Length: 282
Length: 316
Image 1 (tube, each protein chain N blue to C red):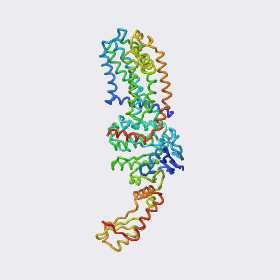
Image 2 (cartoon, rainbow over the protein chains, first blue to last red):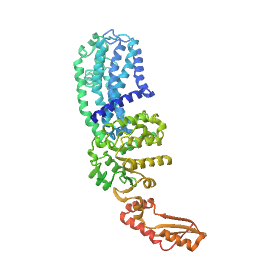
Image 3 (cartoon, one colour):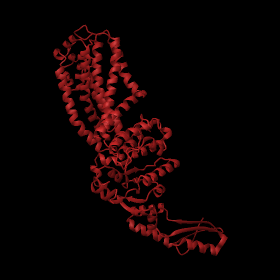
Image 4 (cartoon, each protein chain N blue to C red):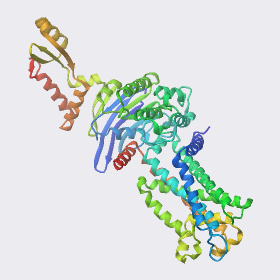
């Protein structure tokens, strides 16, 4: 068998093992449950509000938007922070010291983060569907949901890898988190984007978060609600276009940036970071 | 037969500082070489160049007949690196991680070298059998370091690099580690390059010792050869009545025989001491820092021989 391919296969095994570990680690279980609890609480508070211009429940609109946000967070933030942390603690250097280890590591992370994102989505969507009304579910809904999630991960995972390669200190994650939170606010996740100023609408539509929210709404909400979106439509073609463009950009950039980052890893770099981190602790 | 490690004129320059200023040495199959030297001498840089983790500024470096800067995955599979772990793979269990990392080596198995190492045998070899199903985050410091060694050798490497492998080991763990290194070099013919600050460890483990100071190798030889290079004389100490004496001589056996013939039972607390590796190391490194290594070697010899011929009474 081709050794490179066996590295890929080891990567899938690695992803599976690490995904299984998340079920027995309290912290990981919390990262599954926390967004679900948060979204349920937000929906409870919004249950009497309606989407402006319609009689439709605002909370039912918020759920799919928040699911879109979860996909973006999984791909961007979870992967980036994992890379930063595992670079600091030497996981990446171990991969580098192993034949085909970097391929295995990357495949493993993609499987892990995709798996965690899908599980996280399921934990959010299932209770909400039972507790709240207003969703329009058919086979088509699930198909749309599937392609939006898949495309969303392909668009965001490589970007997450790029971001994760650019920072070497986990304490700098704030630099990534703050603009991301700003984008979430601008992307019409918790409130329809059509009421925002035009320039903000334009800005939000450059980034994947808005389109992920829109795609998710198109999957779970009744078709009439498309009328309150920009252009009065779910704009599937544009969704595929923008997410696809981010995917291409990420897939071109990620290998270059990852290779550059990996080339600079060495035992003394890891030791220096450990030294720094331990100094911060004491 | 070609050398497993072949380094010629290795230079490493950061900005305008030469960390390595022309390092040359070779190591053959099954040889254990210890790299000694003060902090900042370039030990870690040297080992990282050989591991393929750092790109050199100049010089010729061959590891298993390949340039580590361009080593492919097949080459990588024949090289073992023991890394100082910290908290990576904390959620993994010992057996789980070793089995996983071992699986990357399976395609590189040859009739001569079965890869990877059988997981349970490996765990036993590093003494972690009782902890095989423990989460790695729950291992003690010493257990973790043994796991690091296991990870380094899981692919049955032909050459193994260890950067300060026993830092933080207790004496028992250190002894077990030494046994493991002997087994790897004797039974599996693994070539081992290690750095250490522990001179005693270097003397016990290494067939050859390289002393690195200020980016150059200032000594290269077996522990005995190095000791002889610095001094051909032994120091004899004894007490007689209320006095303690010290005498340097080239022929300690004859001197002691004469001593007993002359004084018989009056001699007590007899001690014969050759220059230890520590004496050698200190003389070489100190000499190098204050000038040239060659003059340091001479100066050390002179210091001892000045006192020979007559016994000196040591003030208590």
